[in-house]
Image (cartoon, rainbow, N blue to C red):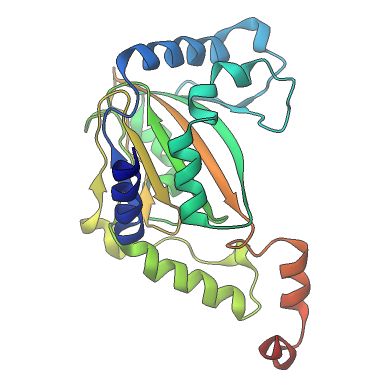
Length: 249
């Protein structure tokens, strides 16, 4: 496990992402898929609102802070996984927390309509708020099933751009997060069910379209970094200070 963790961290630091094949075996994925389907479709879970509920995409957010949520135990294979927790700890280093676990089922139908509705997701972009994200493929993901695509190594460039933007006392919400010039460098991250993808959201990435008749199930686990994000109270106070005083700190 240590060698796999070190290898994955090395890839994450160098390329901005890592792919771990066969992270969970078929028996474990069968359990997770059963709970996945129940979480999305069981009427008993109607008190948990859909994050998205369209003919193309169904998604729900498992509230990690709600300790009495019975669904937490159903996804404990992911939530409490030592490899994932250690990887987040060693990469983010300090001042971070597990943020949310989301369940996505994407169904290939009218791709043009879906792409027009979610066009921001389908171009190379970085995230508005910084996260370390883990994607677990519950189904096989090939070229026809909307794989995540990334531009390897771009996280270093865009991390600096994000830092510089905010150091200039500019609102992070207004930052340009799209860069079409990397379209030809995007690499699709394919994998069998049980594959784990981890990536730094300063890495340019984009969603892929699920073709008609195909579908994809993914569990997403996000870690929020207080150190990397500038929307905490102390950062806001810091950014409101005159620039000469900021340089003295």
